[in-house]
Length: 185
Image 1 (cartoon, rainbow, N blue to C red):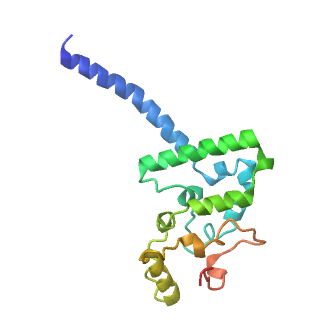
Image 2: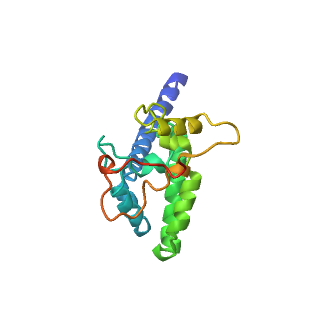
């Protein structure tokens, strides 16, 4: 058999095997990336319900930030995204089936999540935080975070801890709320 025929056969075999594996992986990632899927575990039900009542779901812009937007790296960082999603998924499954819902500590999980947040995760959606002419104080506060002096670094969640996953007795609509003041102001 000629050398080029052998190479073409190996390439064809690779495509025939790789395409279905990639498609199945991608389909699985998409299907397991919805807030409803995240809420299928009893431990996450509180987080899901408080997310639904937050301004990250209810706002005049009609934008909805779901679980992955905040808790995972940006999807355009493909390798880091797949790694983080897989790691989080395996951890959540093990905790769910080994420890059970009774052992889940919501306060501890919340603190661990806040400790892991990076400003880049918030700035995926909040890109224009340096131009808010009607909110000069907020604009200046954000400038000190984005262009922080060494030793004075802050994270978005230092001031904005109470926006999501806080029990509310009603839905929070951004346009109906009074002016928001971050916790650090």
